[in-house]
Length: 222
Image (cartoon, rainbow, N blue to C red; front, side, top):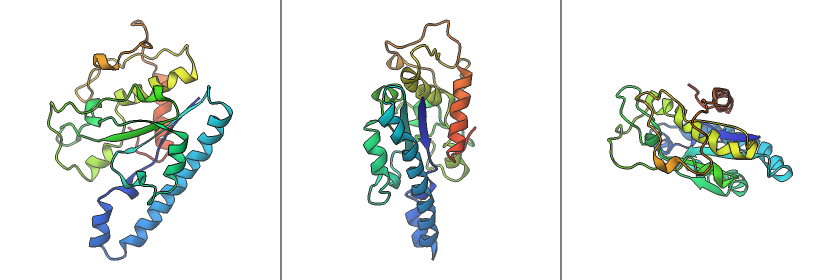
């Protein structure tokens, strides 16, 4: 059994500091937004904590937020300490290496993520960092930034593959086929001893389930 938590990061975006200075009374609205976000984090912890305690070998959990959002600061979001205590392993992949693109310009977006997990194997499959070999979309905002909250199929595949060993050793998950220009192919660094045999077909059911959970957590979904 695997759980992946993705809570909208809007309340913790660093641009909110500018909004506080620009719009009178915005601090009250922001405080309410953050209170709702913190409540969702607590709910996620309430789901994962008993599973890790009672079935540590059968259940894994992970949680993602943008790498530089203020939600990772325990002084601003005390509940994140609960998440980190349950999930000591982390990875900091860059979305550009998983095909995250600006919907208008089709340029790759940097999209620095941070993922924490109960099991280190989850993180081994989502460790790609920007190689500096391409141009990033410049300061995307609005719909472009919102759209970047959608996981590409390749990133979702990495998450599913990382969780799979803890859920069932018999699960076979292969690299998505027919990847469009919006997705990048795998490199040798993504291959390890657990790589599935070439005759495996993509596990579309698992990917669909991940997308459903992604949406139910309140995040945009493709």
